[in-house]
Length: 236
Image (cartoon, rainbow, N blue to C red):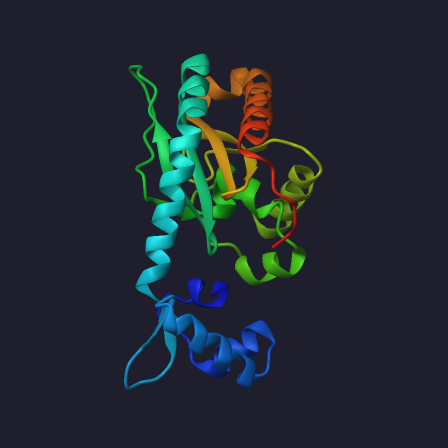
């Protein structure tokens, strides 16, 4: 399913088998079972498969649950810091915003719910990429990384950043997706899945408050994972 998620146009059985490194017969059995649950669907006469409609329903149900649980923490974080807050998950190689709280101030940042951005150019995405195994990163990250702004990191720089985040650093980006905007983010390991929560705002404001923002994110992470339940961490 991850292989199909990374290829929304669909894949043949042979292509799926090659990507996941499994025998074609095994892939056929898995696809047949997923098709019965409408989690994948055939492409038609041309052959091949793509993700099915039931997957979207499952994601929507899960996200509705996580949004309900996380909303109080998002509101508290935004009110405490006076900045916008968003929660994201990883969809393929993109950070997908599932909910946000917009700070009520004259100069504010709004990331629409449902927007997808290159994970390597956002703090939310970096936080989520940093917990993945190296083999997944090799598959997800193009080489070279497409440049979004002059501040977008190259592959070597990104991998160095991900290593630091994996060792406990708070993820951050400054003008890498949109010039003049910055963000800090940290992962949330919950029984409903892995998400990231980010503080987003103008670079001029955020860089002067780096330490308190990072501390606030760590406290939020501890509170969320204590309340919702941290799942066993694995790199996948």
